[in-house]
Length: 437
Image (tube, rainbow, N blue to C red; front, side, top):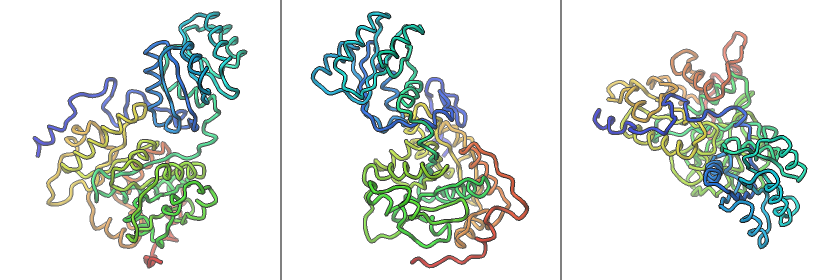
């Protein structure tokens, strides 16, 4: 076992990577998370390979997933020639290494072939306020001094369209298991409940495991068509319909449950989950996605677009391999975001050989944010009663771990409550599970 684990240790790390939990070459800020790029078409014409590479890097960022970006060389001359025959897009990015007057003359030629409504962002080497004012008088939307930073470029595009936090309220947290049966859904439900009850924030929990989801069981609710109806015709989904589909689980927590039936196959259309996320984000501060253990285009795209990703694994070889693959793919697809959060579950299960926590962390090159000890009786009792773990027993390492994970992903501290336990606890204790309708 030890030899197999050693083989999986990462030999080469990305340049600049710190190797610690939550570390990355570039740590995102709250300002980055508030950015929102609309559905636009962007054409970039570059004078240098460095600028082209930076724009392509920005285009690959998850925040640019709604935009269609094309990059080519040739600068302003190539752009003018191209748009003599083709309508201009929503946004043109122009790089020129020409100086003041020559640059302005190039932009004047570009203006002759631009359609009304097209926005232009200029990239140049001149850092002068008089030059900047000349650009603004010509109607240039933004000017960036080279070299181009991909994140700054994304921020500038968002600024041009006024697309900031005013259009995006909520953060998206996706929970996925490295392997089936590792407790990812249980973790998602308990962390979501903790955020809602202990931090006092509104949370929507979406169970995306349509045929086998357990959220309705864990929250002691009737099975409903919440998620299935929301994505059936994504074009008609709005805040009013979403509110009708939600099931209340207390003052601050609402559930979009899975139908959990096998009468039909659940083929998710492209864009359906994206529309659900967009509508939910405009309604609540926190959206938690309970992801199924599968790897389809919609599941991959949903993970990549999430603000935070939590991978749950148990300390065995199959989980190590799968977690390592997931972490690698997500780091490659999200170069400007921190790596996913790793949680090791069922640690110390009696009579089960397992990989040591430090060896697991070394092999996947990521330190766990929490290690939850095995407690089959507590977790089984909570599941059979349709309760959260904290409702079955307010004390214990697992409850503390859920609070720590909630604080890590939200960046918030627990709200102070009066004596008597968690908010809404009294109304939920002692209930027997309802029979599915």
